[in-house]
Length: 316
Picture 1 (cartoon, rainbow, N blue to C red):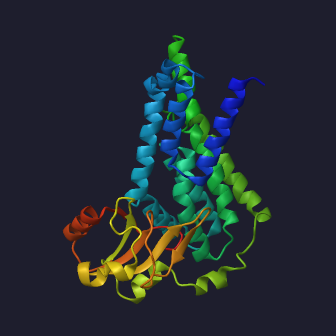
Picture 2 (tube, helix red, strand yellow; picture 1 turned 120 degrees about the horizontal axis):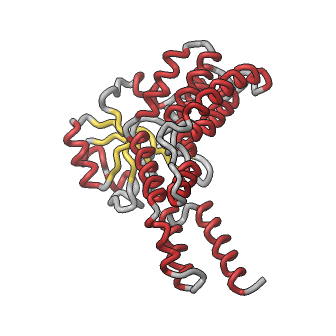
Picture 3 (cartoon, helix red, strand yellow; picture 1 turned 180 degrees about the horizontal axis):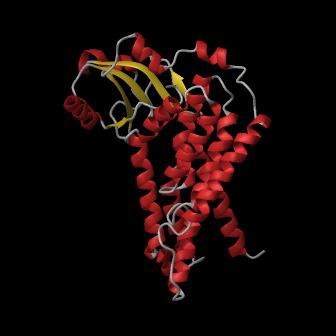
């Protein structure tokens, strides 16, 4: 093994560690590696920048924007509510609708993003229905994978193959070229999952235990907080970061009542009880009771560098 190969493997290992720790952010890690490789002479600067001129890279980046838009506008939450309403108590209808909706949404964004969006909704549905989450997670994953066969932009390999065909002078694929193959495969997958579910996990044995734990949606109903509930995330630039709640005195200063704090741990998200000595951290999602109107909420977000989030997640 020569020195250059060993150095590249070392950089790859460092990249994987930074991705796993999410420190720094993933986009920053990618830019760091894109800078280090040409500076050390492993690749040329033109090679490092060649990908940025590829239309597929721009299109994939745009798909991530679409995915984030679906999250922030609450589309996933509404689809989850629609799923529960239409499926009712029928597990058969629930699985069929879940796979159809996931495959439909996945036709216009990455399958990874679709799974990330729908996992909270599926967990909520499984909890409410009293069935094991595994009975819905497997159909979710299968539908997300099959969604890559629906449209040209559904997955990156489709775009790469289309680009290579165009470069070689061949006719590329049109937007729905894959759909005639994807829909029959999706229907077969739905039929298979409806048959194979008998071998998946059975009833959720911990449903009663989890049902005893109140959810934030129940708190909103119980305490009459409808139209007053908000979920705001602290950005790293927020002056509230690294401050205790008793230091901020939010109730007197801004009319803010913090109901709960959603905090990201290494591999999970937890709810932190807000006390006077609780110290806020960057990335915390604050569940708030605010009596202000929409304009005042926007002003509050701008003043304290807060980001408004949809009312969704595992704890709803």
